[in-house]
Image (cartoon, rainbow, N blue to C red; front, top):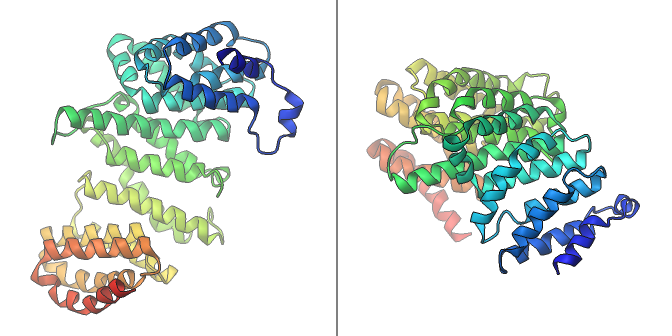
Length: 389
């Protein structure tokens, strides 16, 4: 079986692959088979891939180099993770160098391998922080630097930050329930990463409905804010006002022209990022800032003649924050917001929006008690009607 897989990796028909519209080549089929084999047979498959890397990673033929990385990426989810981790540290310098391979197919395959390493072997990278910090730094900086690379490369690399933060957070919470993450292997680069991602999000070529790098970048920023370790809180503070301004400017920014769908996507994601700041208490707002931010989202509601999910969530957090800290301004903002919340509850045909609105109603019942009672009486018939649909 392994010999057959090797044959398909090393004997590829360039013209046939070029003519294949779906790009699902025999080499990719072989990679899938290799992936499944690595999860159910002995560790010989790891040695097989290691031999491929050793013998062919510097081959002059780019299609062979691509095959090597297809093979490497295919075994990263193996049950023999200890064996794979030994390969990863040895292979990292080669992966870093190959990110700039002159062949886009090779560099994008390398980016795919790196993404899978961050997905399944973040612990290996964390160990590097102690055992080989220079290599870890080279690795992280290579990812940041190549965020200006080809779209296929960038899309894979952006997700590396999500994987590292999600896994690091999980590892820490399992070991220290209830505690806040003090630091992580990305801490040193946090500001540079966020700055690079925001730059990517506003490149005209980044927005593509089918392969949307812009939204992937904004999602990663949101994740970095949400998972921010304690030693990076000051770094993310400096971006809050610019993100609020960016949301405010979506109505008039020439970047969006007449593309409403594009504008709506940015409004959703920018609102989600701001919401993460508030949920995790990354910033503390005074009363004027609360009302200003609420006004921005309300303006968007009016322009769209509709509510949107992250906007509803963001405003609900502002309402609760005002209730807890600026009670003198609470009644007015609650009355205003409940008009939009009622719209959200009424959107039963839009399950996502309706679900978010119902969740907010539940939060308000717990948090606001008698202040919310009269508005709940108005909403209850609509909520009851949803249950009958």
